[in-house]
Each structure stands twice: as structure tokens, then as C-alpha cells.
Image (cartoon, rainbow, N blue to C red; front, side):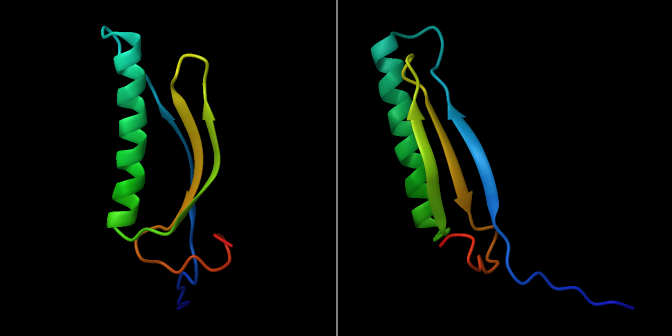
Length: 81
């Protein structure tokens, strides 16, 4: 019987914070920015280790990020260096 243990782990995600439809454009853009800030605050509050590798605001005001983040409480090794 083999025993395996995860020594380190990291998740890489691309997240698109999209504009809500059927509301004024300026309000939708503001809501996207607030949602993105709330997402980062949630990561901080949960003490999730993370690095935003790339952040782009599209012409329509939506935001796309590429993030590397800790999975559960696994050690991240050198993934986030």
C-alpha cells in the first residue's frame, strides 16, 4: 500500500467580473469594482494566500484577473513566490 501526501498545492484561476445587465452602465461598472474589492477582502479575511498575476479592465468596464491562490490550508511551497 502506498501512502501519498500533498506537500504543496496552488490553484490558478481566471475570473471575469462581468457587468450586470439591465442597469445603467456607470452603476454596473461601479458594482464590478466593488465586487472585485469584496473578493480580495474575502481572500484576506479567510487568510488565503494569493497573488494576482494579471488584472485587466476591458473596454466595457468589466475586470478579468488571473490569480494563484492557496487551496484550503495546504502549504503553497514556492508557487506564490
